[in-house]
Image 1 (cartoon, rainbow, N blue to C red):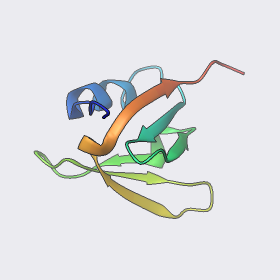
Image 2 (cartoon, rainbow, N blue to C red):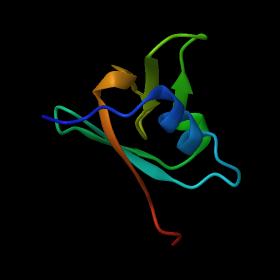
Image 3 (cartoon, rainbow, N blue to C red):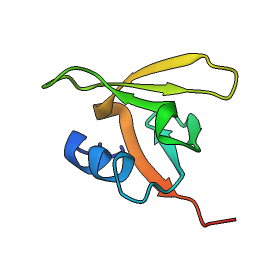
Length: 76
């Protein structure tokens, strides 16, 4: 069983300055690359919903409780 990340932990990575690209991994094993802050959105206050866009612009909604890791990518 995976331990979920908290919305606070996720927000810290996603809103870091300067932004660093990262990969989101869900409990189901799906991975989403987040190359730019515009690819990752938070729901309204107190919401656990996040939206991750893929390169084609498709929105992937997930509950933050299903995110098990965020891996910061090394600079190119």
